[in-house]
Length: 506
Image: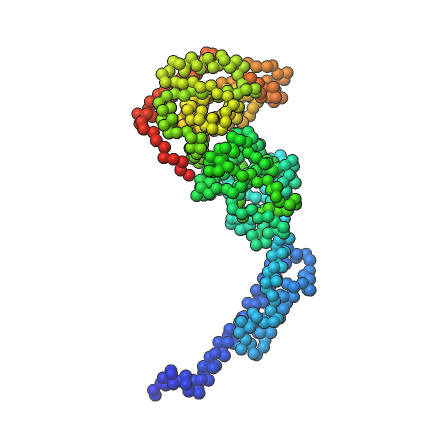
């Protein structure tokens, strides 16, 4: 028997009945008991999520969300039990008068999230005994991250580690950091009366201070490393903390270096325009709290190289000056006044002056760090191959010399036994910035301490003591280093006689 063509079958009464039956079957299958189960499961899931913080309190049956959940479950059961469910569309389910107003419910949820933001003390006194260990006592509930082993440790907000939440701060106390606090909040559920700081913010924690150029540089250097790894993006503002207490400024030297590095003066935010007790949240924030800890030597050298180049450009140190200087040997005595200065400066200057005069092309410069502007220091260091200086913050300038330059350091009596690892910071800095630290001379003579020489109470006597000299030792030491530098510069000139700069590459 020949089969009826599909088009004839659709027009026939039987075909029409079959088609109607198919549509009814599809409608019934769409609004089957399975749909009811899905709706019920969704309601239960939402109910649990938005009541998870109040499990100990029975839900208020009069609350809008609770009523909404019950109403939606009842509506789902009605759909699954009625015989007319087959004619009910999905649009009708959503727009049904018995279905809740989801906009209102989302607003209620957002309000709950706002109220659930919990602020914790920036300075957590529980970790005061180990402030520099582990998480530190600054934002102690947060963990640091780093992109690769040997790179800077930091926190970034928002990020996957913060689950997309923003960093918020509250308080601007500059005497007790435990009165200042922090929290994380969702971007669309920030606390009430919040001030949102747009663009990128750098938030720095420093266990020491921002006026001492060594401690200040140690705190901000990781931001330069992060800047280099992130397309050289610049911050809109800096927020500075010391023991959780807010600070309003960087030292002049440090601020000048950051201006040179980032192409503009750093704006230090102190939240003056924010109402007392109100929160401040940051659209984007990077937090550093471990100084340069964790950075590899290679990364440190890259950072110092960039800052050196930027500082020289900022201070108009021309390539012609540098090329001319590289044909000579520059020896600089960077002197201190007061604590840890030389007892007899003229005698010390005379020793190095005589040894420098014996070497063709050697030029001696005597400078006092407290009388030099930032750019003065940059220019002096740019002309220096051998830096002679007592231990002190002024030695931080050593990274501004050309790579492979030499450092000679001097200490008062008692430092080797009593000063701890801090006395070696410039030895390490020389290595990290590509310089050569040629050891240190430690004065064996000084005031007598009433305690034994290895008693730490003697350090208060020795810390800021003045430094003597040993003419024989100083002469031989400087002579050996001058010979090494002369040989090195001759080798460098033969390899690359035309030294040029390609600019500062971030």
